[in-house]
Amino acid sequence: MDIRSVCWVLLISSVFQGCSTHNDFFTSIGQMTDLLFMEKDLVKSLKDYIKAEEKKLEQVKQWAEKLDSLTAMATHDPEGFLSHPVNAFKLVKRLNTEWAELEDLVLRDVSDGFISNLTIQRQYFPSDEDQSGAGKALLRLQDTYQLDTNTISTGELLGLSADMVYKSTLSVEDCFELGKIAYSETDYYHTELWMVQALKQMDEGEESSVESANVLDYLSYSVYQQGELEKALEYTKSLLALDPEHQRANGNLKYFEYQLAKQRRAEGEQSGTDEEKKHEEKRSADRKKDYLPERKKYEQLCRGEGIRLTPRRQSRMFCRYFDNNRHPYYILGPVKIEDEWDRPRITRFHDVINEWEMEKVKELAKPRLRRATISNPITGVLETAHYRISKRRATVHDPQTGELTTAQYRVSKSAWLAAYEHPVVDRINQRIEDLTGLDVSTAEELQVSNYGVGGQYEPHFDFGRKDEPDAFKELGTGNRIATWLFYMSDVRAGGATVFPEVGAAVKPMKGTAVFWYNLFPSGEGDYRTRHAACPVLLGNKWVSNKWIHERGQEFRRPCGQNQTD
Image (tube, rainbow, N blue to C red; front, side, top):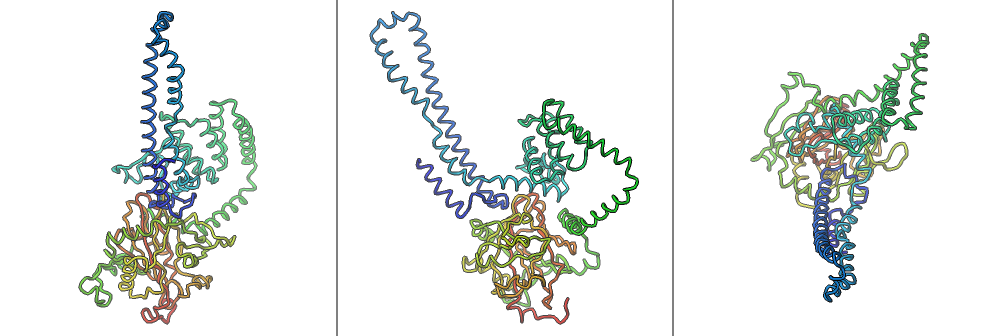
């Protein structure tokens, strides 16, 4: 291995310290930036290889041109040419020595440096899981923000990317790949959308290595799975027009024709079963209502279609300077605060963390970012305190299997920073205590999160409910009484923190923090604080949060006598 490769090994080991080959790159934009520098190094190495190959070919070309003129002249009169002793000597020398040297030149592999780098770096490349995860993230953005396939393919996301320097488009191959990712998840709805988009771009004349027959093969089956027999039959006939010998299509054609004829006969005899069918459809719709309302509200809030406060409630919201009851540090430099919502009270603190502090926190957190493993939000099983043991990641069990599991509905990576690790962390903790008036000595470590492609965190509670009496038992500090959330980046589109129960939506604003209580003074949980992080559509979202616990707050926030005091 050459010195360049050795240096690369040392560099890559420091950049990816602690990373495994399956690193879930797509869950953190911050860590994906390392991939860009890796790719840049690969391109440089590839260009060096091309230059070396060009130099080698130029030498071979010069040799060929020289011998071409020589042999043309020599073969015109071979005996006359060889009658000169120098020509005879040089012929023997060429064939014995110089052709062997040319052979070495041609066979010499100038790609060693490039291949070495590629081999070393390949172990840190994104995996199939990353590619699938990034694809599913695009599908999630498509649904949440109600984007059609052409909008995504042309890069015109919500009309915001028209002036973006880095706007990108999807090729036929990209659309086909998204369709296949959806197909592998048995998501036939999105399979159909993206296969149709691939065909559309091919019909518009875009050159592609993808064959129309392959697209139609996926398309016919996906629409069949959605119960659209007539469309499935139409696509199958189109496929057979391109490839009459397609074995599966020929079989499907007969099957679809048989099923369609059967369906039409059944429709003619269905008079007595209409009532039963309607009843089953109603039951199915009722089952969906159990989950869909929150999903619908969540996505509406993410799109900015949330509830608006009434003028009366709005009149009670203020912007003001705040010194937390004449705290010595803030008397001369009070903090600007703004009411974001009234019930529950959600307050935004402006300019409470500066640029240097934010960059230092990101710098400390980035090497440690790990994919969080958490519980299912539908079952309501809370994050447990395993991160206190591991010090670096929040892990919980799957209520069905009892095993630790990676949550697919939280697309981000997190790291935990303790106060003793750097003065900036200690200073931030003290600032939170000064501004909230709560004791942070029993709070959890500062959690730093970076959201990935389509990064989100679906609706959840921060506090432990009554059916989770042991949620924070290992900590011994009681329930999570309050949440403090720093925004350490602006997000161009998406990424809001939303509260589906009440209709509140708080947009990320760099350098600000939002604060709310998870518990009433009585200690009862405030179920209105159920919240979510919307998918990031455009931008890179960094946040850090502090979960403050009950212990130590006995005299700072006395208990109330009423349950919802």
